[in-house]
Amino acid sequence: MARYLVSGSSGFLGSELAHRLSGQGHIVIGVDIVAGTYTTHVQSIESFDITVVYDAIFHFAAYVKGREAIERNFLSIAKNIELDRIVLEKVLKCPPKQFIYPSSSAVYPTTYQQEVHRSLCETDIDFSKNNIGVSDHLYGWSKLTTERMLWELRNTINTKISIIRPFSGYGPKQSLDYPMPNLINIVKNNPDNIEVWGTGKQTRDFVYIDDVLDTLEWCLTDTDQYRVVNIGTGIATSFVDVITLAHQLIYNTPVLDITCVLEKPVGVLNRYCDNTLQKQLGIYPKTSLEQGIELML
Image (cartoon, rainbow, N blue to C red; front, side):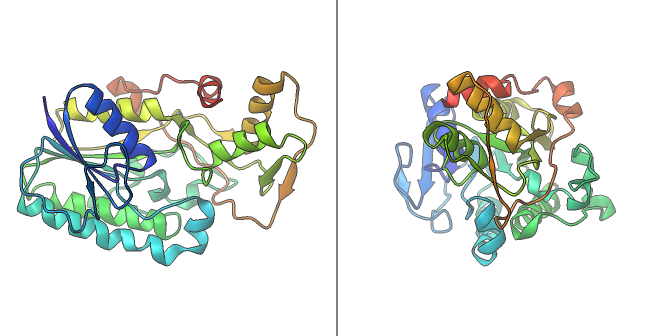
């Protein structure tokens, strides 16, 4: 039985991980400013005292919502840099056996994610060569900044550091601020007025929550002292494709009309991962997009 600290334990990813770890008999200390099933301490992680050596700290607490917040509420999102700095100061004073940090696919250079695009590989960011590119808005920059802090700390403390870069994770309990639950909700509850932000041709790499959790669990068994790994399928799926598939699964008919809301923010045009390392490590996602949407429904 291990002792784990999960910050952001009432959020989508934190609560799902806490549920899994608790179900396995582990001790889970959950910290969040919002009450939740697995939140044992309703307070900010900045004010929480880390006084015991945890088997692992999963640091999920962050200021973030969907694309609109990323582009239009960027100063709030920039607070993540200070939040993460405070957490890492606590880690330095009382180092856990392992520190697991969910970064984001938003850290990758946006030049690779437009009309001319390619899969995004872990090695596209190399701090040792000052090779980073321009991340996606301040959200991407904040995540990249914390990655840099962890890179600097990797030889300072005897803590195993695992950084994951999830692409577009989704699951049944996710907020409607995010693309997958929002699109499915529209198709299911408002089929006569299906809207999509932008042209709907923008693509993302959708990965189901169980596959994200599987990778987080795998990190606990990884022998590398410092690891960065993507979590994604390597498949670029457009928003229109998601709507089409959801409509077919719900009504068994093709979708007839989709309204494009062009004034809404859409982010980069194409974002999907290079899954070479995941396949080498045996952690490639198991859930297909169709299976994932069926589970959502």
